Length: 115
Image (cartoon, rainbow, N blue to C red):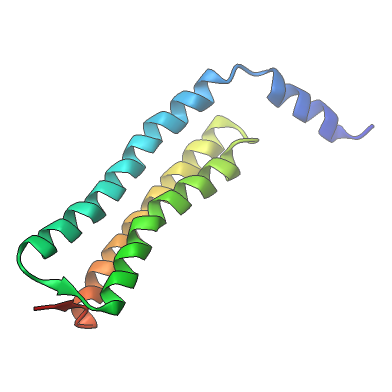
């Protein structure tokens, strides 16, 4: 038998509640990122402005980015220690924030918001 059997047994024997609590807490932060994108789109549309095709593509990408980052962080951290899981979630949040800020800049630079 290999050494992997011992480590997978150790991971399987741990209680699941710290992982669940970690996913829920960080899931709330990721949900805020999604809400931020939706609120920005509603504000732009509420001002009587619209999006070009590029603008819609950018907004949909910004909307899907937190989901993808959360899924990647969950998959990376699920079989590792709690510290690695926390670092994966924080890295995913940072990536999601950078993508949102980049989309915000690109909306102005590409004239994706139209009157």
